[in-house]
Every structure is written in structure tokens, then in C-alpha cells.
Length: 227
Image (cartoon, rainbow, N blue to C red; front, side, top):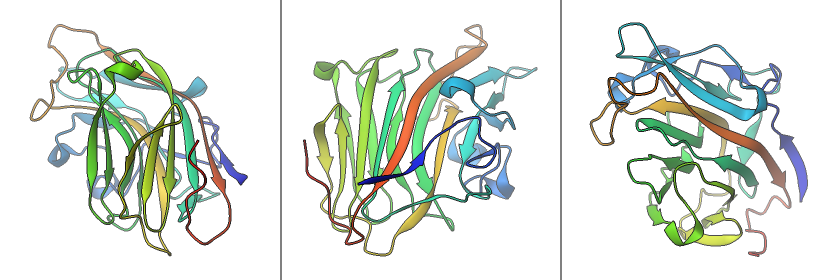
């Protein structure tokens, strides 16, 4: 496996900040997806993704980085393995995620998290259907926890790992010719499905992606060994 993408969250060649076709009219808001986001054009030194309460207290200025539209225009492909190390947020309303997107879909959620479900990681395959809500209290999943993630985008199965423990193999995969852009972001929940930030709570939320890389092997879409 060769490293084909090693994230620098300050790189204007790798990433576009604050603009994504996953948001209506490329942003800056996405209220239809139950988000209080107002996208920021700032990059994310040290991998810190933040959300700051805007005047009026309803919307939040949020970090979103995507490879879509960037000079390098990197896309994850069938057979790739994505690895990341993350520190979860602690504040209610924070909604961190690493995911993929292209042409109105092609979405694989490497992870989503909401502190009101403190031990729960959400992983999903929106390409061929399937998801798992994984309770990881025994593995230390909790607000503020730091751990490793690995996702293998196989043609016949997408496999998710936490610190090298397989937490879900969907046995559906992405197909032989799948490809999509990367998104790393912090949204803010509007309270429909998950707690929104308290009106008199913190004015800043945050989580950290300490590193993210993509490795690529043979183009047959098979999954690497599970360790």
C-alpha cells in the first residue's frame, strides 16, 4: 500500500475551505440537514475544526474542508484505505465528521459523533445502503477521547476499524468504479435529532483530526488484511 494522500489542513492545494456541493448552493448554510452551520473560509492549523457562535446566537461559524474543487482535486477510490486519528468534542451540539461526497451522493461516513450519545460512533454506507451505530464505551469512546480510525473502501465490503478493532463490515461495498472527494468538518446540530448547544453554554466548540492519510494498493477493490 502506497500513501497517496497525507492531509495538511492548512494546504490550499489539497483543500477548499467553506464551500461544498453537499450544501445547497455551495453553502454557507444547510438548514435542511438540521445544521446550524455558516461555513467559514478559514483553514484548520493543527487539525482543529471549530465552530463559533455568531451574533444573534442562532447560527455558528463552522470549519469545513473538502478536496472538491481544490487544485489537487484528490478523490478516494475503490480499494483505498483511509486512516485518521481524532479527538472527540465535549460540547453539546458539536457534530464532527469525516465523509465522502461527489455529484450529489457517493457518501461514505467514516464517522459521525454527537456528545449527547457519549459512547456512540455512527458509520454509514450511503452508496449501497447500510450503517451501524457502534457503542464503544468499552473501547474508551467518550467526549474528549482520542483514538484511531481506519476505513477500507472495498468493492464488496466497506470495513470500519477503531484502533485496529473491526467494528463493522457492511458486506455491500462501493462497487468497482467508485470514487469521491473527502470532507472533514464540524457541524452544529439544530436540536431536531441531537441536542443543540445550550443558549448560555460555550460560544466555541471543537474537535481535532491529528492526522489523515489515504493508502492505495492494487486496483481490484479487495480489502487489505484485517489486523
